[in-house]
Image (cartoon, rainbow over all chains, first blue to last red; front, side):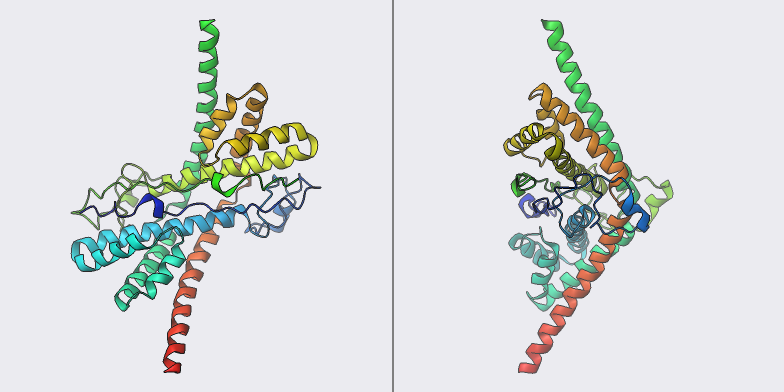
Length: 174
Length: 174
Protein backbone atom coordinates (compact mmCIF):
# COMPACT_ATOMS: atom_id res chain seq x y z
CA UNK A 1 0.00 0.00 0.00
CA UNK A 2 1.24 3.46 -0.83
CA UNK A 3 0.76 5.03 2.54
CA UNK A 4 1.96 8.49 1.59
CA UNK A 5 1.08 8.81 -2.04
CA UNK A 6 -2.56 9.38 -1.15
CA UNK A 7 -1.56 12.80 0.18
CA UNK A 8 -1.55 14.49 -3.19
CA UNK A 9 0.43 17.65 -3.90
CA UNK A 10 -2.72 19.62 -4.64
CA UNK A 11 -3.95 19.02 -1.11
CA UNK A 12 -0.91 20.34 0.67
CA UNK A 13 -0.76 23.60 2.55
CA UNK A 14 0.28 26.61 0.53
CA UNK A 15 1.22 30.18 1.33
CA UNK A 16 -1.43 32.87 1.38
CA UNK A 17 -0.05 36.32 1.94
CA UNK A 18 -2.12 39.47 2.02
CA UNK A 19 -1.70 42.04 -0.70
CA UNK A 20 -2.85 45.01 1.37
CA UNK A 21 -1.60 48.21 -0.24
CA UNK A 22 1.18 50.04 1.56
CA UNK A 23 -0.56 52.59 3.77
CA UNK A 24 2.66 54.06 5.13
CA UNK A 25 3.94 55.33 1.80
CA UNK A 26 5.29 58.51 3.32
CA UNK A 27 7.56 56.60 5.67
CA UNK A 28 9.18 53.91 3.55
CA UNK A 29 12.07 53.49 5.96
CA UNK A 30 9.99 53.55 9.12
CA UNK A 31 10.44 50.37 11.16
CA UNK A 32 7.41 48.09 11.11
CA UNK A 33 5.85 49.51 14.28
CA UNK A 34 2.75 47.37 14.02
CA UNK A 35 4.70 44.14 14.30
CA UNK A 36 4.02 42.22 17.43
CA UNK A 37 7.40 41.48 18.93
CA UNK A 38 8.43 39.11 21.64
CA UNK A 39 11.44 41.30 22.24
CA UNK A 40 11.97 44.34 24.40
CA UNK A 41 10.19 47.60 23.48
CA UNK A 42 13.54 49.17 22.56
CA UNK A 43 13.64 46.85 19.54
CA UNK A 44 10.75 48.83 18.02
CA UNK A 45 13.11 51.76 17.52
CA UNK A 46 15.79 49.72 15.75
CA UNK A 47 16.62 50.00 12.08
CA UNK A 48 14.53 47.13 10.83
CA UNK A 49 13.53 47.33 7.19
CA UNK A 50 9.94 48.32 6.51
CA UNK A 51 7.85 45.44 5.16
CA UNK A 52 4.66 46.75 3.52
CA UNK A 53 1.43 44.87 2.93
CA UNK A 54 0.98 42.94 6.16
CA UNK A 55 -1.59 45.25 7.79
CA UNK A 56 -2.15 44.39 11.43
CA UNK A 57 -0.37 41.05 11.09
CA UNK A 58 3.37 40.45 10.71
CA UNK A 59 5.56 38.31 8.47
CA UNK A 60 6.18 36.12 11.54
CA UNK A 61 2.42 35.58 12.01
CA UNK A 62 2.01 34.64 8.34
CA UNK A 63 4.94 32.22 8.53
CA UNK A 64 3.53 30.73 11.79
CA UNK A 65 0.13 30.24 10.11
CA UNK A 66 1.77 28.36 7.26
CA UNK A 67 3.85 26.26 9.65
CA UNK A 68 0.61 25.51 11.55
CA UNK A 69 -0.92 24.05 8.38
CA UNK A 70 2.35 22.21 7.70
CA UNK A 71 2.24 20.66 11.19
CA UNK A 72 -1.31 19.42 10.54
CA UNK A 73 -0.09 17.85 7.30
CA UNK A 74 2.83 16.23 9.16
CA UNK A 75 0.46 15.02 11.91
CA UNK A 76 -1.79 13.33 9.32
CA UNK A 77 1.27 11.55 7.89
CA UNK A 78 2.43 10.47 11.37
CA UNK A 79 -1.01 9.16 12.39
CA UNK A 80 -1.44 7.38 9.03
CA UNK A 81 1.95 5.65 9.41
CA UNK A 82 1.08 4.58 12.95
CA UNK A 83 -2.41 3.28 12.07
CA UNK A 84 -1.28 1.41 8.96
CA UNK A 85 0.41 -1.32 10.96
CA UNK A 86 -2.01 -1.96 13.81
CA UNK A 87 -5.38 -0.58 12.72
CA UNK A 88 -5.81 -0.99 8.94
CA UNK A 89 -9.52 -0.12 9.15
CA UNK A 90 -8.90 3.26 10.75
CA UNK A 91 -6.03 3.78 8.30
CA UNK A 92 -8.34 3.18 5.34
CA UNK A 93 -10.92 5.51 6.83
CA UNK A 94 -8.32 8.24 7.32
CA UNK A 95 -6.92 7.92 3.80
CA UNK A 96 -10.41 7.92 2.32
CA UNK A 97 -11.18 11.14 4.21
CA UNK A 98 -7.85 12.70 3.12
CA UNK A 99 -8.76 11.85 -0.48
CA UNK A 100 -11.99 13.80 -0.17
CA UNK A 101 -10.84 16.85 1.83
CA UNK A 102 -8.00 19.27 1.07
CA UNK A 103 -5.26 19.63 3.68
CA UNK A 104 -4.23 23.19 2.86
CA UNK A 105 -6.26 24.58 5.77
CA UNK A 106 -5.40 22.37 8.76
CA UNK A 107 -8.07 23.74 11.08
CA UNK A 108 -10.84 23.42 8.50
CA UNK A 109 -9.69 19.85 7.80
CA UNK A 110 -9.88 18.94 11.51
CA UNK A 111 -13.22 20.71 12.01
CA UNK A 112 -14.77 18.77 9.09
CA UNK A 113 -13.30 15.50 10.32
CA UNK A 114 -14.73 16.15 13.81
CA UNK A 115 -18.26 16.22 12.35
CA UNK A 116 -17.94 13.25 9.97
CA UNK A 117 -18.60 10.41 12.47
CA UNK A 118 -17.62 9.44 16.01
CA UNK A 119 -14.71 7.36 14.65
CA UNK A 120 -13.53 10.31 12.58
CA UNK A 121 -13.85 12.50 15.68
CA UNK A 122 -11.35 10.27 17.46
CA UNK A 123 -9.01 10.44 14.46
CA UNK A 124 -9.28 14.25 14.43
CA UNK A 125 -8.52 14.40 18.17
CA UNK A 126 -5.45 12.27 17.59
CA UNK A 127 -4.25 14.44 14.70
CA UNK A 128 -4.71 17.56 16.87
CA UNK A 129 -2.79 15.97 19.73
CA UNK A 130 0.03 14.88 17.41
CA UNK A 131 0.39 18.29 15.73
CA UNK A 132 0.62 19.96 19.13
CA UNK A 133 3.21 17.47 20.34
CA UNK A 134 5.17 17.66 17.06
CA UNK A 135 5.27 21.47 17.14
CA UNK A 136 6.30 21.65 20.78
CA UNK A 137 8.63 18.65 21.09
CA UNK A 138 9.77 17.11 17.82
CA UNK A 139 10.20 19.97 15.36
CA UNK A 140 13.79 21.25 15.44
CA UNK A 141 13.38 25.02 15.54
CA UNK A 142 17.11 25.74 15.81
CA UNK A 143 17.72 23.47 12.84
CA UNK A 144 15.08 25.36 10.83
CA UNK A 145 16.84 28.64 11.56
CA UNK A 146 20.32 27.40 10.71
CA UNK A 147 19.07 25.67 7.53
CA UNK A 148 17.37 28.91 6.41
CA UNK A 149 20.57 30.92 7.12
CA UNK A 150 22.63 28.41 5.17
CA UNK A 151 20.14 28.31 2.31
CA UNK A 152 20.08 32.07 1.76
CA UNK A 153 23.89 32.36 1.87
CA UNK A 154 24.48 29.38 -0.42
CA UNK A 155 21.74 30.41 -2.86
CA UNK A 156 23.09 33.95 -3.18
CA UNK A 157 26.64 32.68 -3.76
CA UNK A 158 25.46 30.12 -6.33
CA UNK A 159 23.36 32.66 -8.23
CA UNK A 160 26.30 35.04 -8.49
CA UNK A 161 28.82 32.34 -9.35
CA UNK A 162 26.55 30.92 -12.09
CA UNK A 163 26.09 34.37 -13.59
CA UNK A 164 29.82 35.14 -13.53
CA UNK A 165 30.81 31.81 -15.06
CA UNK A 166 28.17 32.30 -17.80
CA UNK A 167 29.37 35.79 -18.69
CA UNK A 168 33.06 34.75 -18.51
CA UNK A 169 32.35 31.91 -20.94
CA UNK A 170 30.55 34.31 -23.28
CA UNK A 171 33.52 36.70 -23.11
CA UNK A 172 36.00 33.90 -23.90
CA UNK A 173 33.96 32.74 -26.88
CA UNK A 174 33.99 36.23 -28.46
CA UNK B 1 -0.01 53.79 -6.89
CA UNK B 2 -0.78 50.45 -5.35
CA UNK B 3 2.70 49.43 -4.46
CA UNK B 4 1.79 46.01 -3.11
CA UNK B 5 -1.21 44.99 -5.13
CA UNK B 6 1.00 44.16 -8.10
CA UNK B 7 2.29 41.18 -6.12
CA UNK B 8 -0.64 38.94 -6.94
CA UNK B 9 -1.60 35.94 -4.83
CA UNK B 10 -0.93 33.56 -7.70
CA UNK B 11 2.71 34.59 -7.72
CA UNK B 12 3.41 33.92 -4.08
CA UNK B 13 5.51 31.07 -2.77
CA UNK B 14 3.62 27.89 -2.00
CA UNK B 15 4.44 24.66 -0.25
CA UNK B 16 5.74 21.71 -2.21
CA UNK B 17 6.16 18.59 -0.16
CA UNK B 18 7.33 15.27 -1.49
CA UNK B 19 4.94 12.37 -1.60
CA UNK B 20 7.59 9.67 -1.53
CA UNK B 21 6.04 6.38 -0.39
CA UNK B 22 6.93 5.24 3.11
CA UNK B 23 9.85 2.87 2.69
CA UNK B 24 10.15 2.09 6.40
CA UNK B 25 6.73 0.50 6.73
CA UNK B 26 8.05 -2.20 9.01
CA UNK B 27 9.25 0.31 11.57
CA UNK B 28 6.41 2.78 11.97
CA UNK B 29 7.63 3.95 15.37
CA UNK B 30 11.29 4.14 14.47
CA UNK B 31 12.66 7.63 15.05
CA UNK B 32 13.36 9.52 11.83
CA UNK B 33 17.03 8.56 11.70
CA UNK B 34 17.60 10.19 8.33
CA UNK B 35 16.83 13.64 9.66
CA UNK B 36 19.78 15.96 9.66
CA UNK B 37 19.94 17.37 13.16
CA UNK B 38 21.84 20.30 14.57
CA UNK B 39 21.63 18.60 17.93
CA UNK B 40 23.82 16.03 19.59
CA UNK B 41 23.84 12.47 18.21
CA UNK B 42 22.08 11.23 21.36
CA UNK B 43 18.94 13.03 20.12
CA UNK B 44 18.69 10.47 17.31
CA UNK B 45 17.81 7.83 19.87
CA UNK B 46 14.97 9.79 21.44
CA UNK B 47 11.30 8.98 21.05
CA UNK B 48 10.52 11.30 18.18
CA UNK B 49 7.50 10.38 16.12
CA UNK B 50 8.25 8.84 12.73
CA UNK B 51 7.40 11.18 9.84
CA UNK B 52 7.17 9.23 6.56
CA UNK B 53 7.54 10.57 3.05
CA UNK B 54 10.48 12.97 3.37
CA UNK B 55 13.15 10.70 1.90
CA UNK B 56 16.64 12.09 2.44
CA UNK B 57 15.31 15.52 3.43
CA UNK B 58 13.57 16.50 6.66
CA UNK B 59 10.45 18.46 7.59
CA UNK B 60 12.81 21.22 8.82
CA UNK B 61 14.52 21.38 5.39
CA UNK B 62 11.16 21.61 3.64
CA UNK B 63 10.00 24.35 6.00
CA UNK B 64 13.33 26.19 5.52
CA UNK B 65 12.95 25.99 1.73
CA UNK B 66 9.51 27.55 1.98
CA UNK B 67 10.73 30.25 4.34
CA UNK B 68 13.54 30.93 1.84
CA UNK B 69 10.97 31.63 -0.88
CA UNK B 70 8.95 33.69 1.62
CA UNK B 71 12.05 35.80 2.42
CA UNK B 72 12.55 36.49 -1.31
CA UNK B 73 8.93 37.60 -1.52
CA UNK B 74 9.42 39.85 1.54
CA UNK B 75 12.67 41.24 0.04
CA UNK B 76 10.86 42.16 -3.19
CA UNK B 77 8.23 44.01 -1.13
CA UNK B 78 10.92 45.82 0.91
CA UNK B 79 12.92 46.86 -2.16
CA UNK B 80 9.75 47.98 -3.97
CA UNK B 81 8.68 50.12 -1.01
CA UNK B 82 12.15 51.69 -0.82
CA UNK B 83 12.40 52.40 -4.57
CA UNK B 84 8.90 53.80 -4.87
CA UNK B 85 9.82 57.02 -3.07
CA UNK B 86 13.23 57.85 -4.49
CA UNK B 87 13.58 55.93 -7.76
CA UNK B 88 10.18 55.63 -9.48
CA UNK B 89 11.79 54.40 -12.71
CA UNK B 90 13.47 51.43 -11.04
CA UNK B 91 10.25 50.82 -9.08
CA UNK B 92 8.24 50.63 -12.32
CA UNK B 93 10.83 48.30 -13.81
CA UNK B 94 10.69 46.04 -10.79
CA UNK B 95 6.90 45.91 -10.72
CA UNK B 96 6.77 45.25 -14.44
CA UNK B 97 9.19 42.33 -13.98
CA UNK B 98 7.18 41.01 -11.00
CA UNK B 99 4.06 41.11 -13.18
CA UNK B 100 5.72 38.85 -15.75
CA UNK B 101 7.55 36.38 -13.49
CA UNK B 102 6.13 34.21 -10.70
CA UNK B 103 7.61 34.64 -7.24
CA UNK B 104 6.92 31.13 -5.95
CA UNK B 105 10.51 30.04 -6.62
CA UNK B 106 12.70 32.81 -5.20
CA UNK B 107 15.97 31.56 -6.67
CA UNK B 108 14.53 31.11 -10.14
CA UNK B 109 13.04 34.60 -9.91
CA UNK B 110 16.44 36.11 -9.02
CA UNK B 111 18.30 34.08 -11.67
CA UNK B 112 15.91 35.29 -14.39
CA UNK B 113 16.14 38.88 -13.17
CA UNK B 114 19.96 38.67 -13.23
CA UNK B 115 19.86 37.93 -16.97
CA UNK B 116 17.17 40.47 -17.97
CA UNK B 117 19.38 43.59 -18.23
CA UNK B 118 22.19 45.28 -16.31
CA UNK B 119 19.65 47.41 -14.42
CA UNK B 120 17.67 44.30 -13.51
CA UNK B 121 20.92 42.66 -12.40
CA UNK B 122 21.42 45.45 -9.87
CA UNK B 123 17.83 45.02 -8.67
CA UNK B 124 18.37 41.28 -8.29
CA UNK B 125 21.58 41.86 -6.31
CA UNK B 126 19.69 44.21 -4.02
CA UNK B 127 16.85 41.73 -3.49
CA UNK B 128 19.40 38.99 -2.68
CA UNK B 129 21.18 41.26 -0.22
CA UNK B 130 17.90 42.26 1.44
CA UNK B 131 16.63 38.68 1.80
CA UNK B 132 19.90 37.67 3.42
CA UNK B 133 19.81 40.61 5.80
CA UNK B 134 16.10 40.10 6.58
CA UNK B 135 16.60 36.39 7.32
CA UNK B 136 19.62 36.96 9.53
CA UNK B 137 18.74 40.22 11.29
CA UNK B 138 15.11 41.30 10.99
CA UNK B 139 13.02 38.12 11.07
CA UNK B 140 11.98 37.31 14.63
CA UNK B 141 12.66 33.59 14.94
CA UNK B 142 11.69 33.38 18.61
CA UNK B 143 8.46 35.17 17.81
CA UNK B 144 7.74 32.68 15.02
CA UNK B 145 8.19 29.79 17.45
CA UNK B 146 6.01 31.28 20.18
CA UNK B 147 3.30 32.28 17.67
CA UNK B 148 3.25 28.73 16.27
CA UNK B 149 3.02 27.25 19.81
CA UNK B 150 0.17 29.64 20.66
CA UNK B 151 -1.61 28.94 17.38
CA UNK B 152 -1.65 25.16 17.78
CA UNK B 153 -2.87 25.35 21.40
CA UNK B 154 -5.56 27.95 20.68
CA UNK B 155 -6.73 26.21 17.50
CA UNK B 156 -7.07 22.86 19.24
CA UNK B 157 -9.02 24.44 22.12
CA UNK B 158 -11.29 26.36 19.75
CA UNK B 159 -12.01 23.30 17.59
CA UNK B 160 -13.02 21.26 20.64
CA UNK B 161 -15.04 24.09 22.22
CA UNK B 162 -16.95 24.72 18.98
CA UNK B 163 -17.78 21.04 18.63
CA UNK B 164 -18.94 20.75 22.24
CA UNK B 165 -21.10 23.86 22.07
CA UNK B 166 -22.66 22.59 18.81
CA UNK B 167 -23.51 19.19 20.23
CA UNK B 168 -24.76 20.69 23.53
CA UNK B 169 -27.10 22.96 21.57
CA UNK B 170 -28.35 20.00 19.53
CA UNK B 171 -28.98 18.05 22.77
CA UNK B 172 -30.92 20.98 24.29
CA UNK B 173 -33.12 21.34 21.20
CA UNK B 174 -34.17 17.69 21.32
